[in-house]
Length: 501
Image (cartoon, rainbow, N blue to C red; front, side, top):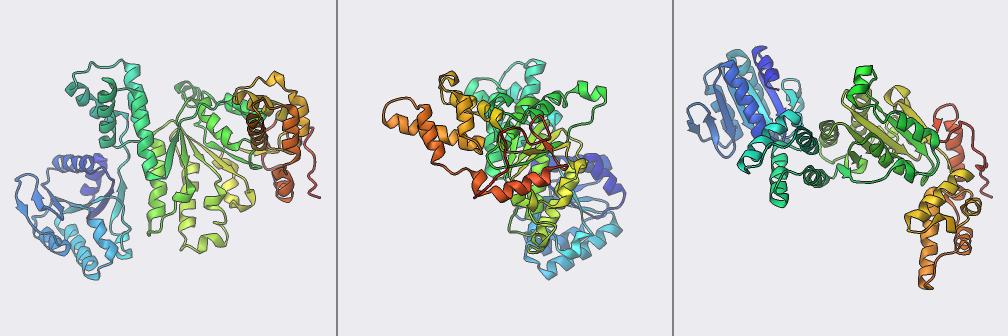
């Protein structure tokens, strides 16, 4: 970033917007750039006014228009840092906008570089093309190591082994320098050392505060999923795809997969298990919270998500029920919000196509009809999967998994008979049926029997009946467009055509 600032300054740029919440780190970069340029640096804030960072001289001017007037009076060929100045443009003050445009014109002729510093605030249309936006990436491992080293010294802790140090820095990926320093310090207080598990825990808490991303700590593996053998084999083949050995071999980084199918058939479990297969963190994106009410907030939220996911690389980014966030973008849905959905969707598409960091995206969807056609293009995904209702063999495996999950021995039940009795039931419905039988048996202080399970199953109406038309449409769409998650592209034995009557 410092070199980029230097290039812009030498090219005669007058206005930059350095977007970040890491004020101290950004100021250090601007100060280093000014030093290399051999230019004085003047910093302004509403609380302190203008400060000459070389002499320490202070000029109080809290009013932004007055501050711009003071800026013009500064000697040319300098760097001027304006903290939080973008927030003043939210009021769309005509005088302020006009004064700022005049100030930029003056800066171009006198060799000044004006740098706005702060979180992104949408600029007035008159300024958007006059100010270049720069996003300060979250710190990488090298920068985080500069935070870790002095903390180890101040706590009189020995240097950890290389592999331990790498795990600590990996655990801190996605945090700002201040957040990482806090996590390191808390770990020292709690454990007497810097523990990567504590750092990871604090990172999960930090990301959850934003409401956009959540670190999912799950022990789910492929063994927890009944059936879906083709998709499992495909994932296992790519288990080492993020390693250096794969890069040396010439393998491209995997992009991700889109999993379409019937609700309750294991799509979410697959996303969780994918992280276990790759041995990387799992991040879940809440698309409902991605869209904000303020102008430019939605786009900024997505950029924050992308930046965080790339900082925690390698990682798996899970976008659940993606059609709820981007359904109808290509149709009328994108025109009812001033084009916000279309812009956010376009940014996501471009990132999926062009991303160079090891972030494997797993998107799940129940209703493919709501997804824009351009989202389904194969180049943006390594594979499109269709998950159908489980067949008899898959239901048998699901019963075994569910029974064992709740502390019972699967061999005490005839799971083949249960699989036949649960025809048209999804994995989620099978688990719900077993839980219901547990409640019934618990009130009578006994273990659930196959008779209990049969009664529960016969008394429930599976989703496959209530949504039969939707499921048939989804099956029809998947033929020739998506790969079936089972071992064959033909409907497996035991998976019949649905009849809602």
